[in-house]
Length: 242
Image 1 (cartoon, helix red, strand yellow):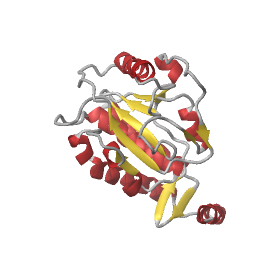
Image 2 (cartoon, one colour):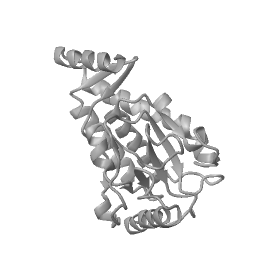
Image 3 (cartoon, rainbow, N blue to C red):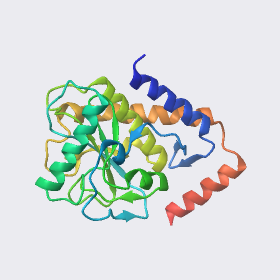
């Protein structure tokens, strides 16, 4: 069993074990779990400070945008390479694009390593809030972006990257109570771009299905909601209707 598969199985088990708060809304069930995949922090990969503090909105994202980096399809799957990738992306975004910081909130290397992107992203996800990034023109204030290392116009997606992408989407959908069938989209759905590449874009229906299946598995493991969970769910639904 590969490291990515093991992490994914552990994530599913943890979601099932800690999903004491199972929410229902619009016919979809979410495990409101604290389990997260291993995400390397900005300090760990050596990020430079942003030019200005991140802007944080007091609301969750409603869509997850899948990107590719349009960079070479490197064969190095090491953590050191992943950290260097994040530093290179940040350098390009700040020095070439002129942005305050790295654009996306999360980055996944071809070796499956997951890195925090824009400053404050991990804390915002934990708090149910949104760090405004630069992941999609005109759509930065309601979406969260995942950059996937490589160029996927023709080449297939590496297995380790794919497994981590599924894990991350399960985590984000659980954290923000998103329906993967509508929440997971490609960059080209919003902007005129080849991103995330023809191959990865054609895989998005499969991504939605795998994420939904993992969420359903977690909800089933959690069992039927208690009276307290029903009260919490009712308050949640009234708040969203309002």
